[in-house]
Length: 308
Image (cartoon, rainbow, N blue to C red; front, side, top):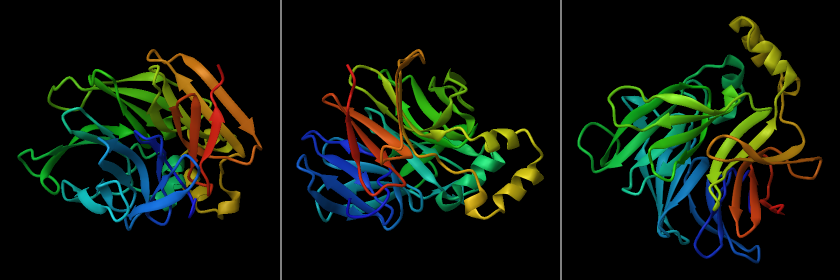
């Protein structure tokens, strides 16, 4: 990559990859490995999805929900939402796009930004939420649309997927070691939630849909024994650990890890590699029998053949 930290990966209709880097660049990668910069968000792009072949919707940790188009060099970057109910949108994470153009997106934390994400994991703030942006809808919102809260009280809401029938959302709760279903039944008030898979042995990050209906979960790192020990302890003790130097805080392990589950939450693939030269996988994308991996801590995308 021409920069650091490709956090998420998308495949377009021509088999090219799209990713966002720590310096704000949106980069397209051709099949031969060549790269070109499409745009710079001026922030920190995280999750992204294509809306057709001409528009990229981006969750930017610093600037909010963005639209990038056309998906060519020199693309325009438009802020769709950066304030919700008068509160600046901190740590916008990942979008999911419905057939009618409605955009659902996750906000990992309302208390901590990306640079201080470990504070949310230690505090267990439960301020993550899922929001909905409807273009052209009447009411108070952002830009030319309306924004409302679909689900809140989530433990570090991260990767987000719509089910094929769009009846529910699947969201990774990184701080809760689980993947959760959010029902979209249209009823007023908070949406009902239920676990898809719980007590995961690591931190789930971005989610993507495989062509056979599998849900790919990027597992950023195995669980940390110190963090597990601290979570039931008083908040002052967790705050004391947060105040320690970075070298003494819980840290991701040197491991590449991709997990796939079916719609019922049963594990179909559990692919792990220790000390393989790539770690802290934050996105997994299946395409033509290949897994493309992204990492917020690496300076490259990786690929691996999908086991039969």
